[in-house]
Image (tube, rainbow, N blue to C red):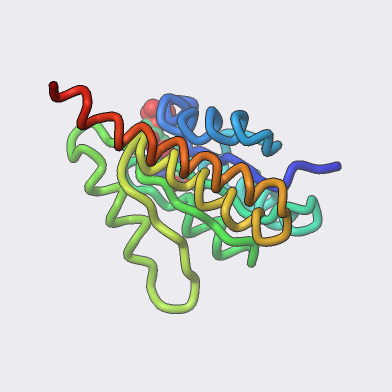
Length: 162
Ligand SMILES: Nc1c(C(=O)O)ncn1[C@@H]1O[C@H](COP(=O)(O)O)[C@@H](O)[C@H]1O
């Protein structure tokens, strides 16, 4: 069976950020493909990737990119598979450029946009898991268990103050 999710990124340098999504997907036992597919460095490959996404059975694409981050929007332009955009922190503008590039999509081609950096990558994975959980009761239970553990960990924080 083909994996339901893809992690796409503009450069291998984005993996440091996107791996925070991968770790969560691994923990939840959700399969994914991963690739570097830059919109401006390899546009033909990026088009082929996006055009084949639905036929490969992808249910969502988590796309991370930094700087002038065209990738999530360009993928969304070429497929109706939902694209979850992760702004990667950039060297000079700390990822504000990436965030604005991804979040400010003109009306008509949406990209769901997450926070800059590792937290955004992790939340994109959790969001994708929640989407898949709509059709998968076991996965929904895992997500609820994850939330319950997180709540317990947060409650335990008060004890740490003593
Ligand atoms: N934003 C994009 C795209 C794109 O949007 O197509 N392709 C590469 N990049 C970004 O360039 C940054 C620097 O890349 P290098 O580290 O390879 O120089 C990365 O964060 C990547 O996402």
